[in-house]
Structure formats: structure tokens, C-alpha cells
Length: 410
Image 1: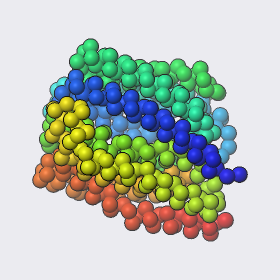
Image 2: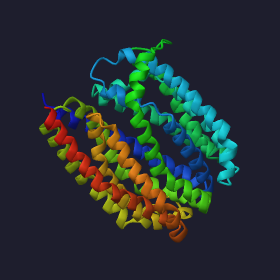
Image 3: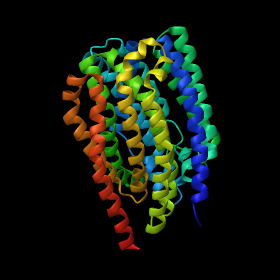
């Protein structure tokens, strides 16, 4: 049985979801950015990167494990849920404990309240029914579309209304909180089985043993994609951080969204043909070609018309134009290279993903500070672009080795 039709359908649904949600997201941010100053937005960025870091730091890799698992995953739901609750509570407590020190590190007193507020998000998310991963595992992307779109609409509505009323970045976080509460409720209403407080240590050990590489990869990936924010915020202040993160979101993310959609759909498809080197290679090459064709025109538009795009959000963001084009190039390259990650995960080579992200992080760590000191926020863009180029030969080698190993074992 071929999976081309399922892949195309899955990509169509997920592309539809991303198009709808990103249009809403850009409209939301356009409104919010006209209300908030770059400095206020920079304070929110501090809270969001702290949340992302601690989430990654104690990542269990359960979702990846459940998609990889060839047997029925219902037996894992109870244990996964308990682990998720404990993890969410731990993340919340860590953010609360570190909030004061983080605010001092960035010399941004205003971030303290936002950090305390955002700690609610992971705590609530911890109660989501893990069986929700079945939408992806069973290739039910139409259900994923409706589910995620509804959640996003609620998140967006709350964020815009509360930001307008409070004139504060707290509104964005209240949107996240509302979305998290709703996802918990719907995951129990719509998905089966519903989890119970039953814990099995042997199942946890299997998950942790396979998930350790994903945890390491997540940490390095976070440091690579947020290390630039941290350095910009520390060396140049919250104003520059707000400008940089704005440029990052609006120049690079439209491109990488395409790559992320393709990766999300192809991962479960690749797992079903992971033992057939010929089919897997053909599927990968088709994915690579399609991704390249999709992202290149978007990147070209962003590269050629940065000032025209930025003016839409107000004159206070005009200083971000210098970084816009650099990040657009980075987004195209990243989207194309990331097509290899779901393939590595499908054949249970998480260590390859970890290795690539470690390399990119090391190059970033070596270049980011001198580049930022010399070129300002543009230097951060040059640093992530340089780090991405360094990973190309390693990805090519791992692809060659993957197909060779499958052929040898088949």
C-alpha cells in the first residue's frame, strides 16, 4: 500500500491549518504590535524563551515515542499522562523560582510579572490527554486541523481583547492560558482512551531510554534558535530584542512554517516505510523537491520587499529591516535542511538529529557574541546563518549512512 495519497492529503490539511492560523496570527500580532512598544514586546519575548528553555530541558520525548511505536499506544497513555502532569508542575515551579534572577540577568524588571504569569501555561498543559497524538499517528490530519484551528481562535481572541484592555504584554500570555485550559477539556471530551492515575515504571523506562536523544536534541535546538535572542537581550537590551524577535517571526517563520508542516506529516508516513530503503529514499526526495519549490518564492518576496512588509506594522518597527533579509535566507535554508529530521526520527536515529543540532549550536556559540558586538542585531542573523551552513555536510553524510544501513539490514 502506498502512502503518497495519505501524505498529500495530510500536507493539504496541515497547510490549510497553517495558512488559516498564520493569517490569524499575523492579524493578531499586527494589532498587538500597534498597541505595544518594541520594549514591551521584548519583555514578552524574555518570558517566552524562558518557558521554552525549561520545557525543553525536561523534555521526555513521549510524543515522538508514541508516533514511532508500532504497537497499540493505549497502554502508555496513563503513564504518559502522569509524567506530563509532574513535568508541567516542575516547569512552573522552576520558572517561579528563577523569575527574579532572570529579570536581573536581562536588566528587565518588567519581565518578572510576565514570568510568574507564564508559569501557569505549562502547569495547565500538563493535564492534556496524551492520546491526542493519535491525530498524527493515525494520519487523521483533518481532525487535527479542526481541533487546532478552534484552539488557536480562542487563544487569539483572548490575547487581542486582553492586550487591548490592559495595554500590556500580559494579554498575549492570557491567550496562551485560555488555549491551554480549552485543550485540556477537549482532549478528554474528544479523544479516547481517557487517562487514569495508573503508573507503570517499565513503560516509563522504555520511553525515557528512547527519548533521551530527543531531550538532548531539544536542548541544543533551543540553544541554537534562542541563543541569539538571549545574547541580543543581554548585550543590546529589550528594545533591540523586541525588534529582533519581530524580524525573526515575520521574515523567517512564513518560510519555516512550510517546512514544519511537511515534517509533521511525513514523520508518521516515514515510520510506516522505514524498512524499505527504496520507498523511503523516493519519498524523501519528493519531499525535498516539494519543500524547495514551496519555500523559494516566499523567501524571494521577503528578501526583495522587507521595508514594504515592515511598514504595515507601524513606523516603530522600521529598524528591524536590517535583519529581515538575512533571516529570510536563513529560513529558506533551514526549511530545506529540516526535511531530513523526520526521516532520521522515523528510522529511530535520534542521535543524528542531536548531532546536527549540537554542531549548529557550537558554531552559534562561537560566533554570536563577536558578531553582535560588531554588527548589532544583524550580527545575530549572520551568526545563525553561518551555523546553518556548517550543518550541510553532516546532514548529507547521515542521509547516506541511513539509506546504506537500511539496505544492509533488509
